[in-house]
Length: 397
Ligand code: PMP
Ligand code: GLU
Image (cartoon, rainbow, N blue to C red; front, side, top):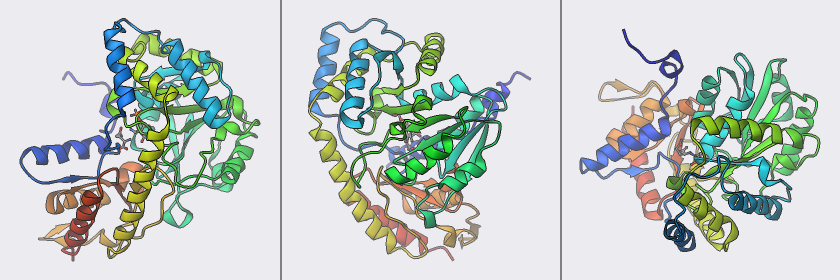
């Protein structure tokens, strides 16, 4: 029989995108679904960024772009890294890609050989484990729970390291938990990693600007590991540009060069128009970033309050990103109309079909007792969604 490769057959579907698609299907049938599944800002891209994109079209930015992105964009990213993070990079160390998603995958494909281990602190974003599979590596998931605010500590990290460890993917602020590591916490991890010179640190900082506790701290600031850190970032979340598909890495030269080669054979440079828009985002007024962050923080407070009032939910107070990740094991094993909720994915499906609220079960994030709500939506939607969740869950016996 003709069939797809084992590589693709073994790959899981992205659960975040699948739940969002399912929610949109129900919406197109006229059902009033509130979509708290996919994580993307509900704001429109700021005007000055859209204007730069329109100008780029008129100025005929219509040709293939350099594989790592326009030099002018990479210079703008270097300025951003200097200005906001106090980190000095050369434009040659920046590779722009089709979203931060491709940048993470590039980094893993560039350093992981078959059988190499990649440490992934969990709960983790759905795509990391699958990307490691694409690179034919093995994921070593470190589990954490709500009682430690979903953050790994130095002892847990050291216990997970083996002679085969090749990389760690650290996401902060975190998707799906919103946890933010303090400088001291990051330093403790850096001090462990400093003892293992073969480990590459992939620091996914896509939620850098959605941080409610102050200045973003990058693990790249620690000199003892600096030459092994790959920073991942992009414009999707900070500038409300998810559909533009523009992310990047700032990496040691040998990794940047490897990704340049990979991208040259695989996708070429990202969209010319998106790049010119991203350049305007990084060089323009940053007030839009602050305004959106403030709105997310207000919504965080609202959803934390409402979700805390739901029986059986254990809730913490996330310090960044726009996700709430309640512990919901209270409902696993309960039933409605003779149908048993076996997993948090069943619970998410029940909430969608019965309560018309889309969210994502924790299993996809390597955390089966939890459920994820994205609160990047209006106050009214948050209030109505939590009302529906409370009412729907009360039907489970
Ligand atoms: N990393 C994390 C943790 C994310 O949540 C996302 C959102 N999809 C990405 C990377 C990718 O972002 P994008 O490809 O839209 O830049
Ligand atoms: N990162 C977002 C999420 O977790 C977007 C969807 C995706 O690419 O996974 O919902």
